[in-house]
Image 1 (cartoon, rainbow, N blue to C red):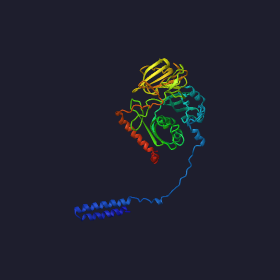
Image 2 (image 1 turned 90 degrees about the vertical axis):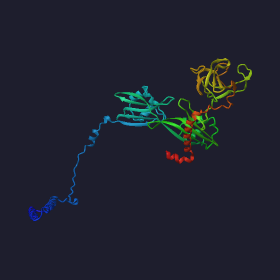
Image 3 (image 1 turned 120 degrees about the vertical axis):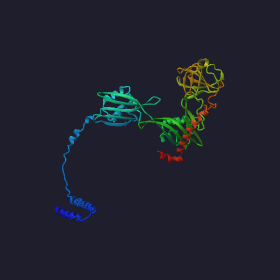
Image 4 (image 1 turned 30 degrees about the vertical axis):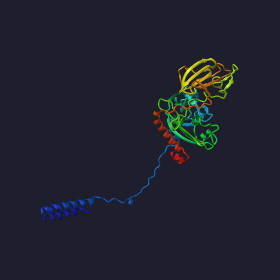
Length: 454
């Protein structure tokens, strides 16, 4: 390090050197000297940083005071603590057993649920339904919520019961459903319903499969071990919970060497139906039976009239049934007569498309608002079984006429409904193509693809 004396001495020498040179040289030399002085000055004032390994290390230990456990517990605001429980309804559950599993110990809440017109919808204890309860530390109910499905249209509502001071209130809001399309395949080992159970197919979907193919397959006697079926159907969900299954969108049944296929198709403002993949309707134009019956009491043949005792042709089929059994229209058509007529008693006549007509006699009464000229659809309720007119007991006299000539409805080759119009075929082909692709994915050789898709 330079001392002050050394610095001054160096300055004197520099001064002497500068005196004996030119002006240019003096300027350059002065600049060089100034830089040198700055360098020496920097070297003289910058301390060297110590090595980190040479720094002393000190360990400091201190005890921190923590609150006692009892003080921590006391600090909790237990008055505002809530407990949430969720359960699924079990077979045989009552409101009491369900609330007990939910941790609800609140007689006032149970009484409210049973008496309030909205709240008691919660008591539709269908097995599998999810119910969520919120309680305080004493088991008193603060909120209860569940989903309720109502009516044949299966409208879905959210029911919420909440505490309001010492009282309760119940509110309901429409549920927002999510539609999904599901695909299943099954193999017949013993019966159709055993196979659908194994494939986890809902019962109402299985019934639709029967309806779709019952004109081609007798599900009681025609099934063979190893028969296969594929089905595509819609399901509806809310908040990730299954609500119900909807319509079968397409079905395929391999019964022995024969394969039957059907796809659902409808356009806005028109009735839908099932069609083969070439667009032909699978719906029969007429029901084989206008009511569900237990036995046929008199067929289409010569018989001794039960009243007069004379032999004469019986121009229809008598379906024995209890008084009041509903009667359905055999096909779409227009009512041409409704009223009383001689031996028929209370009778309805319906004109169908082309040259077909049907007659329904001996009714006990007619369906409400049914009148001449009214349009009816296949399966629509038109009246009830009775024994009016020339009848010895309650039954339905049913006639099937072609060009107004009675024909045996049990033997006639019933035509299919009218096929799709040419204007509808383009949209139909798009739907059918999608379902064909789905059936291809359900084929046994594509099982690996189905597993990957899951």
